Amino acid sequence: MAIDGKALRHSFDNFHDRRAAHMLSAFASNTALVLAHLNCDDKANEIPAVQTLLGTLGLTGAVVTVDAMHCQKNPSSRPLQAGFT
Image (tube, rainbow, N blue to C red; front, side):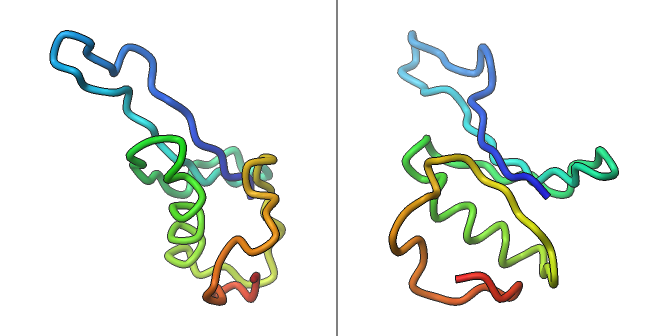
């Protein structure tokens, strides 16, 4: 499974001071299936949103890939259901 966040094109509105929408997606690469979407406030909130998304999926024995933004020393203070910390 791969997880990545993307800003949605043309979702911003400078006139109304609205930032672009940022979506986080969980993708099962072996079946080409999107498992879940999660709306994030901005790029900075993607790190805790990944933890939330993983917790809701209830994965066991899965390999999960994320981008370099998530390579932190202490990504979460709580263990996930999938057994990742």
